[in-house]
Length: 301
Image (cartoon, rainbow, N blue to C red; front, top):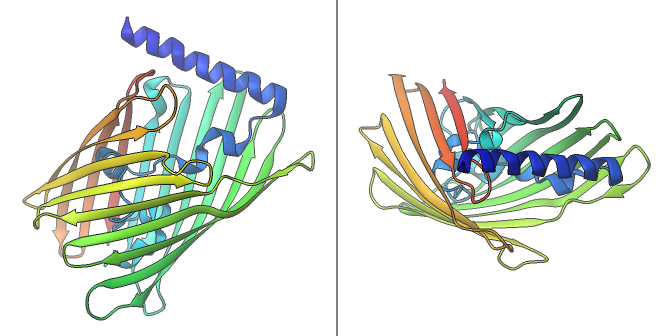
């Protein structure tokens, strides 16, 4: 009964979005598309990652973290949001370490809403760059930037635009601090000539290595409208550098929102010191809809 209720609620949500699109064109900033998580590892940790940011998904969570990479990395993620078969989200990224002129990455985020006979498609292409403020000694300091091109195609009106993120990371032996200002500059242009800006979101976080196998992290989201939008807490436990267990929770401070839990597991195969293949799985609970399941893989070479 609970599953059926969640399914009906999900269909109702999509129906309302569809009606809104027909009435006033569903806008990018109203979908939350540019803020959708892009990594099962991160989701397993409750989404707390801005101060960790040490894999390909730094291209999204905090570009300053790309300096943590020691090898080139290809990563991807896929999810059927809420298990409804209506909203699918995928992410693909390539990132490389510092080659003397900084670290970089290219990513693609894709959201598809299949509502026969209508289909809405949202795409975001991201170029990320990071470099050290100081590279010698501790703490290490780095900065990064995301340059994003955004495209929305709907049956009613299309739009395109750009957005920029700015990130900072301070990493000590045990503790890391991170901040990412998302959509600090943005502009979306519609076919009708209307323009709009995405709301600015500020993510601050701290991560602490309890030992060589355990990590905990905390992220807080703020905006110009709300000093406290959400909080995310999570952790990761490594077993013999091959198996990773994760757990966390996140809370959005909005009317009707309740505490959401997440958990995940990861597996890593080491072919040699610089070549590895990782698979990650996570699920997140929802107070109104069914849980979402996320799958990711990454290849270091």
